[in-house]
Image 1 (cartoon, rainbow over the protein chains, first blue to last red):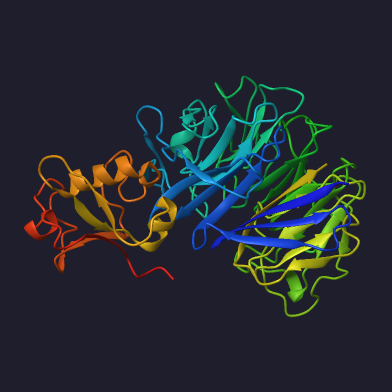
Image 2: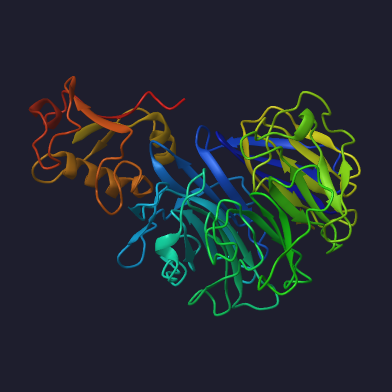
Length: 371
Length: 98
């Protein structure tokens, strides 16, 4: 029988939530790496027991952990992330040049083909890759070396490379997103990159056709249609049907189009989910009602999903990497909140129930569907 | 041998409890003690001092014999009481940040 494993990164450790395919009874294990910030952990699609975790703290910096037994035991691997060549400068908040400085790993993306290969999106924005299971890391410096690099600027959360999407149909193609530089794509395995931000409109940028400078919060893709991308931008929900070459807004009837998380149904590539957040100055749901919005039309037409979610006095946030889906027959949808709740739906969003209510603030959610 | 007390999170990371003891060849300085620690416990590389600059991480401090040595040269000799194991070399995490 199938099983589901939910990997939860929080401000004070990692947790692993496990259930059988019914998704009714859950076992909660953790905290792992208690007291440390776990920005992200994710399993290899090739070897689901191979997990990678980003562990960091303001006191002791970055650690990368690896498990080879599905999270029962962990071992620290290499944590040396050194920019290739002269690090150079990007723009600081006030527009002055600021040296590139490694701060932490935001996102770990294991290869679709090799459990020993994993990508790391870091702050200050860069993409690293390990080909030896995390024992060493090398920067894919063509990204940071793109001519626009000196003009990139941090978002409120830092200048982070937070999204890494590997194209299952084209091994050389990778999509990444940076707050607040925008989205980029490589078609040659990371040697060269191009910005893919045409069609994005950001009120804080004087030039409506600016090549970079957009605060992209997250991007999602369905593996069966790798040319179709869905984006939650700072404001605006967007889609692209040509691998990011151009974008169109699909915010439609959402109550607010600000938000962080976005994901795609496991079996319906035009069914997408977002969690609208009131605004960039009020990071909580509108009207104190926690609602997921689902579009079955790839955007524009949205329905509120609220059954089982708090509909009064709820002022949590759902961060960019804190939503994921399983691939069971009735697609499960999961998200975590800054209030420490992890909600699950085993019916594609029609109804919700908390798996846990009182974890530390949730930074990330990943789901593994195990046979 | 040099006695070293690490902060709690780094003891957990290194899978040790209480003080650790490391062997230091040559002059006993912050640098030589940290190099000995990192050689014995490779998972601590980068967590006490930066990989590239070798600078002490900002929210950690070095103490010995009730004195703050954080701003001493990394090549300054540590107190004799540390050398002869009467006192430990302390790596202290700042009590700040929530």
